[in-house]
Amino acid sequence: MTELATAVGPEVHALVRPREGGFFYSATEVSVMVRDVEALVDAGAAGVVVGGARR
Image 1 (spheres, one colour):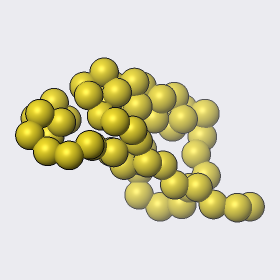
Image 2 (cartoon, one colour; image 1 turned 90 degrees about the vertical axis):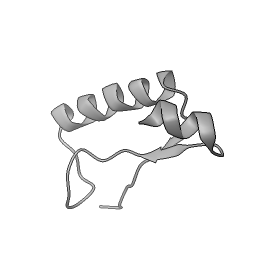
Image 3 (cartoon, helix red, strand yellow; image 1 turned 120 degrees about the horizontal axis):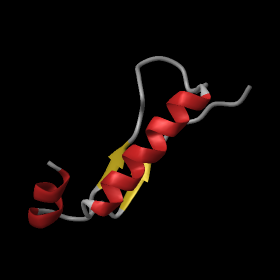
C-alpha cells in the first residue's frame, strides 16, 4: 500500500502506532514500531509520524 501511495501522490508520512490507547510503549512495542518504520522507509515513505506524551 505504501508503494502505491508514494507512486501516485505527494510525499507520504505514515502514522506509526502499535495499538490504540496511550503513548507509553513497552520495549516490545518499540521494537515493532522500529521494524514498521524501516519497512515504511524501504517502501518509499518520506517520513513517519509518532505520538508522545509527557509523564
